[in-house]
Length: 272
Image (cartoon, rainbow, N blue to C red; front, side, top):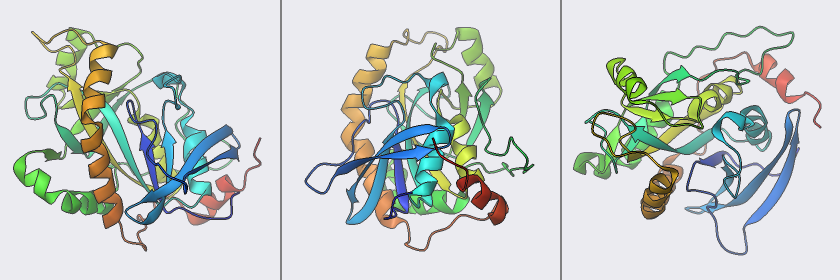
């Protein structure tokens, strides 16, 4: 366990592999019960923040192989209480068009085989997930981005379907997701979000729509298209992260969803 804490963490999705610059930036390796995780420490808006690229620095980790339990356990170990995450998404609803940045507030899980709980040993804990993203943190983020929400630069709310990946959707699947009430499609927010909640860490997610998924008449989705649009949007995404990080109170804490003793027991597990 490291000595200094960073109450705010940022998880970078596709296109966001580094966040800090300057002499005060440093990397460290954190051992967890699920493997070792590399974190980078720095400052945003004058406050300490820890950064973790979800796919690795070189985008070498595909969605279905992300070690989400190791990532979240490592962030809890360094004292993170709030996570600001970014995610590339496909747009399947006209209310969330390509180029939009959304503060999503619901997800539909369509993944399979992913380790999605810390309580799979001798402690049974049931996580309340009606509002999977922290509503307090969402309100803080929405207020921080209020000007952009009023002008339509940011959309407040949205449901994202999380698919297994790494393949993109078929047209039939895309239509199915839209009929189910989803606005966006992603491959990575599950199980990251509920795992964070299990350890008492609130999450808020910025979803950038890079494409129209496989909706009727949509242009074919390619990785090249996605990465090109993410690169163009990177300054805008980072600016939003900075504003949210600046607005999170020093005493922020999400509502307790899992008994504190159960959380402590998970964090006391031996590392490897």
